[in-house]
Image 1 (spheres, rainbow over the protein chains, first blue to last red):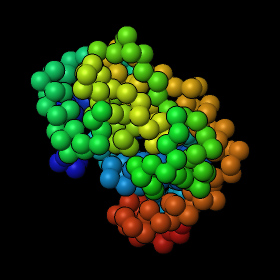
Image 2: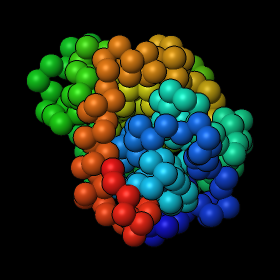
Image 3: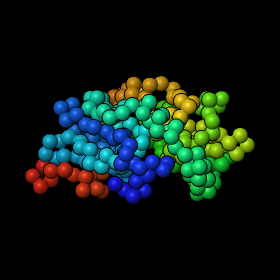
Image 4: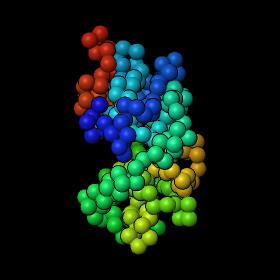
Length: 114
Length: 129
């Protein structure tokens, strides 16, 4: 895992069940999931023998993102949990951590303040 | 909202070859349900939101920056205060089909694997893209 992603708002990323799972029987190898995921997180690999996508770095997956799943025409991608799970997690985040993260983001990106 | 010429939009105008500006996809915040927790603005990597210091709440400032089909801010919102114009899956799949994105996706896949060769699996076996 990329060190930057080891914690999610104070929670250990390794304890969070959120990552794509590919059904190889449904994957057609179109590659959309691979390139939909950002270069920074780059969760997927591509198997040139089976011509299918593979999940290489599940813990790099951004918690709450399932853009790969929603765009897969063949419904080949699932997630271990749903939105209720994410909401329960978010309700447990420390307010102090969010306040610090917001302050840091606005200091780094002053154009986001209005 | 007209953000044409907004420098924040540079480099964000194409989705697998589809002109981003032709399509509507953006979050809307229910200002009463929003508690100002800031998870949406912290989570968004595309400067869609701005932070209003007066009420301590986010605003949707540059909707055209929103990644087509992305609903991450809505899913992490503890109050379920963020909605989108339609179901993301129905929306993005219809865009993918209507604009025939797959030849472009194939090129992007080749570029991605050239740039990140450790993401090619099975290459010892003589496989070809």
